[in-house]
Amino acid sequence: KMEDMQRQMEEKQQRQMEEMQRSQREAEQRQKQKMEEMKRMADQQAQAKREEAARQKEEMEMKMRQQQMEMEMKQKQQQMEMERAQMEAQMAMEAKKQEMQMKMEMQAGGGGGGGGG
Image (cartoon, rainbow, N blue to C red; front, top):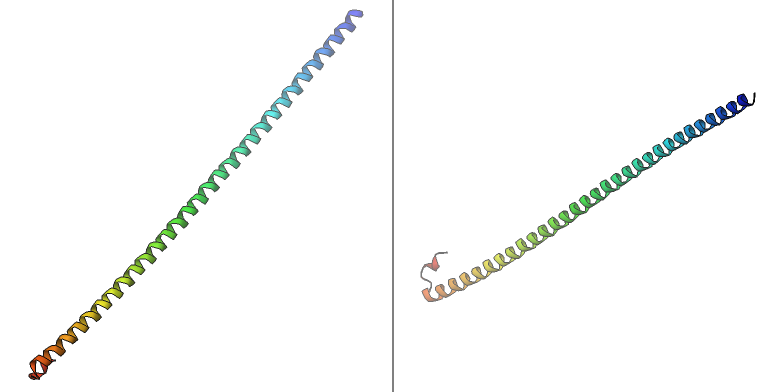
């Protein structure tokens, strides 16, 4: 009878040990899953951050390019306006010169046919 009791005790201990190991394994498994989940979440966040950063960079570059283009357009416009002003000034000068020349010719010609218009 003593032996029976001892065997029962040992079996009970064995079962308890197995139960403990099993629950420990389950706990480890859960922990592992949790860790993996957290890692995946972190990866997703990191990915999202990278994408956001890339998008912002792209936007910045686009804005910079746009500003550059606008600047160049303005400069071209200014250049064109300056050139037009110069042309007009030149033309005015030419006209004045011609006018002067006409007057000189008329005076030199002494009214000979009026200089032809």
